[in-house]
Each structure stands twice: as structure tokens, then as C-alpha cells.
Picture 1 (cartoon, rainbow, N blue to C red):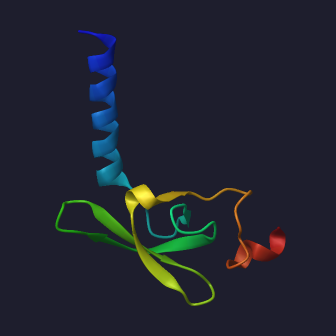
Picture 2 (cartoon, rainbow, N blue to C red; picture 1 turned 180 degrees about the vertical axis):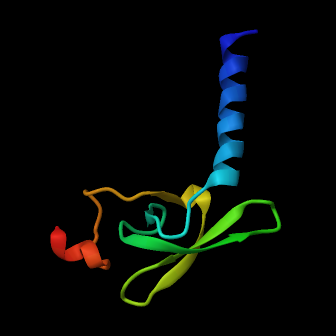
Length: 89
């Protein structure tokens, strides 16, 4: 089996795992396609495509539904100003 085919299969398997595992409620994430603000995943909902959508809440009262591919893990370089950790940075 060629290396390209093997890598392609590995990428597809990773994509399937990401769709089923995704994010957990309570995790701090950044909606990297929309903003650089850190929010908390507060709801997880299985949509009609068999993938999860996630409600991300910010401490100012705003919230938004996002797909898994729109989210990434928050880190110390992100804008935590709308979280309780905002005063730490």
C-alpha cells in the first residue's frame, strides 16, 4: 500500500473520530472562524448530519452555535477578557 493511500485513510479516520468525540461541555474554546474570544462550551447537540454542534457562551451574555470545525482549544495567547480568567491576563 502506498504512503499516500495510508495517510489519506489516517486523515479520514481522524476526521471521523473528531466528529464523534468533539468538545465536551465546560471546555474553553475559541471560535477561530469568527473571533478570537474565549468562550465556554455549554451545550452539545447532534444535528441531522450526524455531527455535533456546540453552544459557546461568553460572560457578557452572548452565545453562538458552532460546528466542531469552527472551534479550537483556547490558549494563553487568546483574548480571555470575557471570561472569569480575564483578570489573570
